Structure formats: C-alpha cells, structure tokens
Length: 474
Image 1 (cartoon, one colour):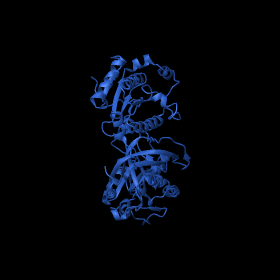
Image 2: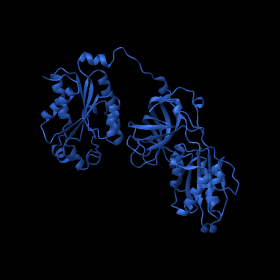
Image 3: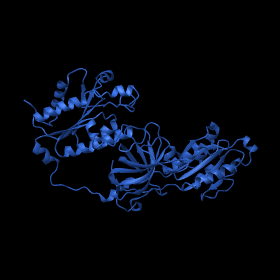
Image 4: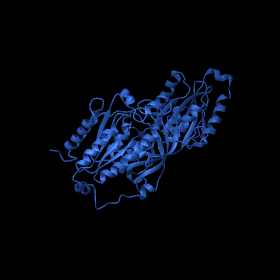
C-alpha cells in the first residue's frame, strides 16, 4: 500500500460496461446484447464498477422498483452512463405506445439523477427506434446499442499534473451504496478502500442518513444493508488526494479484510476541512521513556471469548499477580466501560464495533503511557480485534482465547444473561443469536473447563515473561 499521487492513474482505456437483468429475459436477447457490447470495443466488468451500466427490462415489466433502485445504486457508485435496454416481443405490437410510455417514465426518473448520459434503447428485430434522455447524445433512429456505446467518452489516464492540487485529506464525505448481502456496512469497522490503483485502510466514521430509493427522502440509519444508499463520512490513514477520473467522478470501492468482492462503492462528495487542519503534535516524552521508567515493555493482553467463559476472572488474577510483582497495569473490563465511556452503546453489530473501537483507542493510549493493559471483552468480531492490533507496534498485541463449551458457559451464567436470552428477554446475545468469531491464530488458548483459573493465569504470566514484557521470575 502506498499514497503516492501517481498511484491514482487510471489504467482503463476502453469503455467498461456492466449489465444487470431486471426482468429475467431470455438468453438469446442477453447474448445479442453482449455481442453488441463487444462489437463496440468495450469490455464487461462488474455492474457497479463500470463506466456504463446497462439495465435490461421489457415493455411488459417496465420501470419496476428494482430498476429504479439499480439506477440509484449506480449513480451513488459513480457510474457515468446509464442505458435502459428494453427487450421487445411480437406481443408489443398490440401495445404500440408501450415503448413511448416507458421512455417518458425513464425521462422523469433520469431528471432526478445526474448521469453524464442516459438513454433508453430497444433490443429486438422489430424496431430500431432509440430515444435520447435528459441532455444525452442525440441519437439517430437507426442507431443500435453498439453505435451508442461507441459515442460515449472513454476514461483516459490522469497524470500528476492533472490531479487535484488541493492538499491531501484523510476525511471526506461521500455517497455510498452497499452492494453485498454478505455483511452490513458498519461504522467504526476497518475496511480496505480502493480508489484508482491505490488501496489503503479506511473507516466509515458516520452514516449521516440513508436515502429512500423511491422518494430520495433522508432516513435515519446506523448501518447500510444490500441495496441501501447512505451519505457517509470516511476516514483514511494516511491522507489521500481525492482526484476524479477524466469523467469527473472521484470513485472508490470498499472491501472487507477477508472478502473477494466489494462490500460497497461510492463517490466522493467533498473533502472535510477537519481532515486538513488536524496535525500530529510531537511530544518530548514518548513511549520508550515511559516504559523504561517502569522497567517493562508495554502491551495489550486481549482476552476474548463467550460470556461466562472466564475472561474477567483470569484477567483479574493476572493483574493481581503483575501488581504484586511491581508491574504497572490497567484492566479494562467489558461491563465496566459500559458504565461510563460506552454507556450510550447497545449490543447491535454496529454498537459492538463502536464499543471495541473506543476501547482499542483507550488501550492504545495506555500502551503509549508504558502500561501493560489487560482487556477483557467478548469482542465477537475478528475484524475489530485485528483493528486494535493494527493500532500498535509489532508484538504489542497479545490475543488470548478464553474458551469453554457453550453448555458450560450456560451452566455458569454468573450474570443470568443466558437465562434471559433463552427466555426471549435479551436479543443479540453472543453465542446464541449473535455470532462469535473465534481467533484463528491466538497467542494462547485457555480452556477453563480443563484447568483452574489460578493455573491459567500463571500461563499468561509465563507468556508475558517469555515475550520480554516483564522480568522473568526466578
């Protein structure tokens, strides 16, 4: 990953075309359309990564809610050109005005969206008529889809001299469309941002509102699901230049750490000044001096596991042993931080992400102060635990999986939470109706059904000594 301005050069030179079938048309019509795309010298790509998106419908199906939603998603994702390909059949001869009616409806829809061009084109053998929409290219009545695609401007590479001369920004506002059903787009979670050929970490810091795809009304939202569009603020590190491509769209994609397809796509609205006006203040006293004064190496010891597995019990025993040995520590416990710092958060997926994000930032400050920080949190998502690890230097994050069979955790149930969940009084409970993602490569696994807590705590102490965080005991 890098942030060199030249990395924003666009490699594509031919028109990238995407196709979405909103009417389940027959394969022959789709094949004919694909042939026209290729004859225009264009190439097929994923729909919302395209320069031009073709939505297939029929005169019978018309402008459904699905067609309108696809158009909205394409606009939010930065698609420049929209084509509505209308497959006609011989039955349309009984309704000679059907295509004209569809054209008027499409025209009305396009007046609400600001595509570079938009057109509605029949795909059949009975008619060559084509209508140009909302200031798009004026088409001759004998033009077909291939002829139209040839007229569209191709994106050209941008060189450093053409890029946005304004300073780089690490915070910007954007329209974002969620594209996948695999997961919601969650504020606070770290993703991979791809803009041009640049890729780097990014976070959705806030979802200001969601747009209703029918009315464009602003609706409250805390997450975005598949097919939803939101106005969001996005943070990157380091700062980047928000350069548009040659068609004027500063487009990006958002990928998960483990996904093989984009979760979302969007367009930059504007850079936020706060991203340009906040600078890091260098201090005379830093982490090395603070930790040397305490004769220890600072780190985070992160205990993760189901409720009732024994995280807090072991973390408390570890801190007691460290304190008795003269180590400087602090224990952050999942329940305790919800009495103050995170008292405004619930237990939805979005709130769980924000809970761990805040705790991670606090723990990082304690590490900078030279402390050994013990964190006891269910922390069900790998992505958030990885994000905390990413805040620290190598070797400063020690992940410990505290585990016990679910039935054992339920039998213990020290806080009565499993009983409430089973009674339907506590939704979104990890391990029952909310997922827990176990660590894939933890530094230590503690099976609390197999050994007493005192013995397991000593294993943690031994690990810290072996890693050089504390002095080895005689």
